[in-house]
Image 1: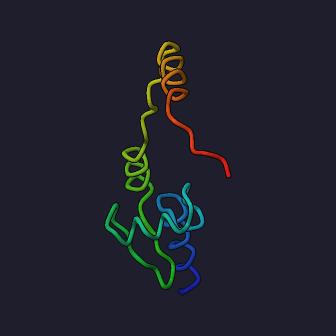
Image 2: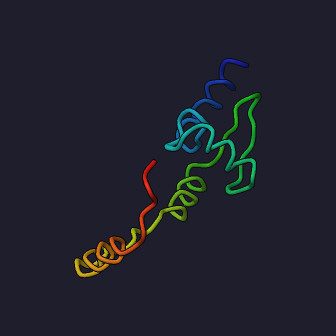
Length: 91
């Protein structure tokens, strides 16, 4: 009877849930995010588990948008003004 229950538990947690090792982020990040309540999580024994859908949704909200590239004219002006700054005397 225990053997059948263990097989069912493995099948249930394998497809729909992440643990710290199977998650697409670093294990420490997974544990910290779960501890702060970023996504719902639970423990099975000593293993911390979270639903894949919740973790993937949280990861999607953490995506950073790239900064726009500076125009070439700005780079030239920045270099010019940087050259006007007084330099420290060398020792």
